Amino acid sequence: MNKWIVVLLALVLTGCVRQHFRGDYGYSVANNSEVQTINPEAGNIDRPIVTGHGAKLDAGYTRYLQDDGTVEEGRVVEDVGSD
Image (cartoon, rainbow, N blue to C red; front, side, top):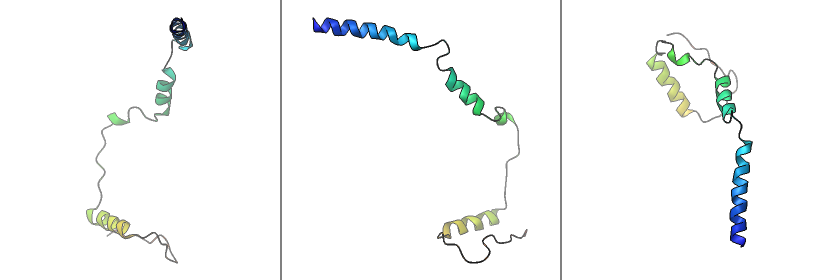
C-alpha cells in the first residue's frame, strides 16, 4: 500500500512541476547574452592583423620573464624610444 502512495504522490508532483514553466522559459538567458554583447557584428568586420616589432616584443617578454616583482626606487615607468 505504501508503494502505491509513493507512486501516486510522485505522479501528482511531476504534474505540478510543469505549471512553473512559462512559454518563454529560457528566454532570460538568451536575452542576457544578447544584451551583454557590445557589438554582435564584430566578428564580421575585416581588419588587418596587428603586428609589432619583433625585437622589441622579444625584449619585453624577456624582461617579463626576468621580473622578480620588486619595485626599484625612482621612476617606475622608463621612457621608451622609437628605434
